[in-house]
Length: 218
Image 1 (cartoon, helix red, strand yellow):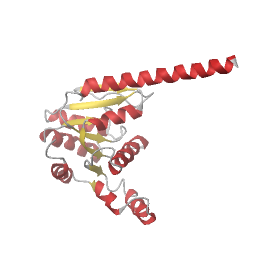
Image 2: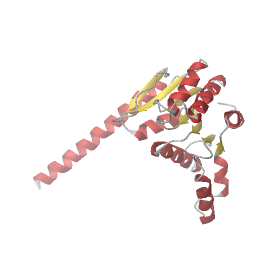
Image 3: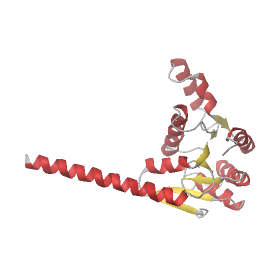
Image 4: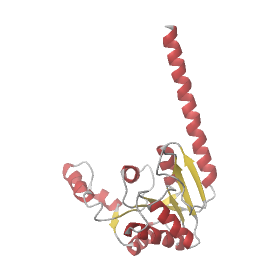
């Protein structure tokens, strides 16, 4: 009985310590970003190289976001994230990052005005969304798909505002469209849900969409 009691007590203490650590990370993020202008968040792979067409498009998009007067927010790492931050800096725009502590790959890129490093993905994702008026998804791996579909789910279920969600890479994400149609056929989503996403390969189309869809009072 004593051993069981000690195990339960230790478990409760660990849970309390976890809650405190999560709270501290949220406070750190809120403190760092509370005075920034509204953001447009760009999701994408850290593994995309500088010679990739998607790197070039993300870089151009960051520049255009800056010209609109918005802050470019990314996960703060390399690849697509670096490209978007780089484009923003080249247009004298603000460039922010929500970095994540990982054993490899992820480290803050050199084009960030400010960044915060988090231990947990769920905290990072919440900060990436909190200050954003729109979301742009480039090609990526598991993490990018997680960010894409979680954000889409939150918009669909009205847990966050219905903000623009743009997906770059019609060829890369070509399997998504038939899957969405199958979901409509099976009744797991509605036809109207397709209106929550714009699939494109054009920076100009993306910028026009942002101008049209971002709430004018923001």
